[in-house]
Length: 358
Image (cartoon, rainbow, N blue to C red):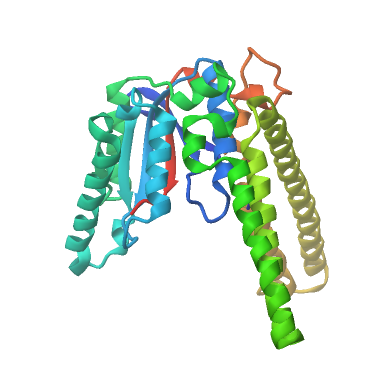
């Protein structure tokens, strides 16, 4: 859902170490703009940097099922390189996924794509880039990647973090921002010129062909204006400094917490109502009806209770995976920004970014 947080955390024990896997949004995501993705990454990465919590590695996930390396995917690679900086690229593992989607007779084709990706990454990253692995065995291979990062036991500070916090740059002024977005003024001028040309075409068409064609042109014009509004909003987001990003994401996270709390309360209230209704039904059955098979009403209530139970489990799981629930004693727990937990510094922090590269 656009406008909602995507960062989640999964904590486990591996190789006698506490490992925190941070699931982050990636670029080229059809569900959100790159500007929003970069905002959320800025929010969390800056918080970790200020609390001296360093990443142990980044796993950059790439689908092997896509036919070719698209322009947006190439831009995503360049953005990752700019975000890490040359000194931290060694900590990135590029992993191809979805090998199980290939029929056996197409496996060789998949390996060919994997090799193409290897060459492309080497061209983009040079000798500083990390390794490239194929997760052909799914979860088993993924665990091996995490184990390798753990045993390496290194820490990395991203150039993006340093530029946001130490230099106080706006998103568009960071190295990664420069790659993902042209200057807002340039983009605005480009689209304004296109609109002016469309207006001229509408007037000329109205004179030549009448109202029907004009209506079609007007529809196209409206679509172009909507696109301009969206691009202008994204450009505005990119001009924000870290303090504004924090304010915005504090509000988003607070709204999500309240929504989850309300969903939990509603589910519990419904569960209580359905449970009481089932108990009343059982009392009536014992009083008036001999023991026998469940009635349709009873079966419906049992089904509702099972559904509500699963729903409550999902809500509790989502709440537990939220990164800001890991509280730290160094800051007020009422501040959403400051609640990236001190416990994260105890173990190894590994970020995963799901991106379309192949």
